[in-house]
Image 1 (cartoon, rainbow, N blue to C red):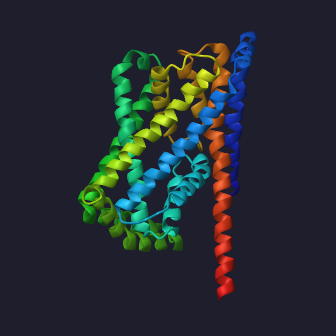
Image 2 (image 1 turned 180 degrees about the horizontal axis):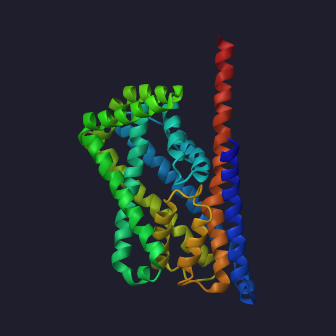
Image 3 (image 1 turned 45 degrees about the horizontal axis):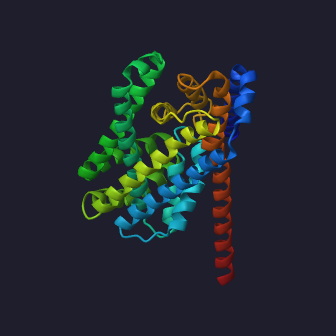
Amino acid sequence: MERRKIWIYGSFAFSAIILVIILLSTFNEETFLYLSHLNICFLGLAIGLRFLSFGLWAERIRLMCRALEYRVPFKTCYLAVIANLLIAAITPSSAGGEAVRIHELYRSGMKVGDATAVVITERFLDAIILVVLAVSALLLMWDVIMGLGDAFIIIIFFSIAVLILFDLLLVMAAKHPVRVKRKVMQILTWLGNRMHNPSVNHLVTRTDEEFDQFANGLMAFTGDGRKGLFQGFIFSLLFWISEFTVASVILAGLGLPPSFGNSLFAQIIIALVSMIPLTPGASGIAEISATSLYALFVPTAALGVFVLLWRLIMFYLNVVLGLIGAILIVKREVGKNITSEGCS
């Protein structure tokens, strides 16, 4: 636990240090001019876009749950999205957020396997959209990408390969559930025999019980639940558009051209780079990537301020909202426990 805390606090500190370095290295007399033209209304619009994107995400979950014949209220889905932000922000590749969303859907009355199918299919849709956008960016801006350096190019292609592999594995799980289950169980059983850990043995048992339901949920999205899958794709696309538009709104707030095309390209690359599980929430990595990419079309004097505002809205706002969501869930669970004890 102590090591985990050090890792998390160290990542936040690293992010703060990188932001300070970027600000100091780009700050000059001209920066005051951009600050004097800073439009608070545009910053409010950027924050509003974040809340809109969370709403699109929540509606995606609600529609996909309905495709599996579960009626999960929008309010429950929105809380699941908000609560997942904190864990996603402090885990590499935002991987911890999935567990929170699965837990909340389970608490709303869904079976664990079905809840897992919904959340994993969300990732499947996100991966498809990011791969399509990334390939489009590669085709349209190959010369620019070649100028980013070998490290960026390797990370971009590696991330695209990981996304494609993830989608292929999920398709295999839907088409050949028995074969995939056998392989998964073999791996988990091997780990259980090696680790001699009761929690691993419990995981093996739960996986054996829930995998069939999970596979059925995946297959439902290719059958009667196809409408939910299509609706989920539409809302996934709208979600990413709203997320990627935030940076352009911030640029407009600084009195700069929004540069929608260049900014979209930059956001796609940052999303791919942030997938590499090096630091929680891509702390430090996102800041450096954004600085390198936006330096191509944003004046140096405004670059540091832009990166700071962008990171505050896209990352630190997530931490605050995620903390609020977590508190609401804890308060709800405590209230339920008190009520159940009172009835008994």
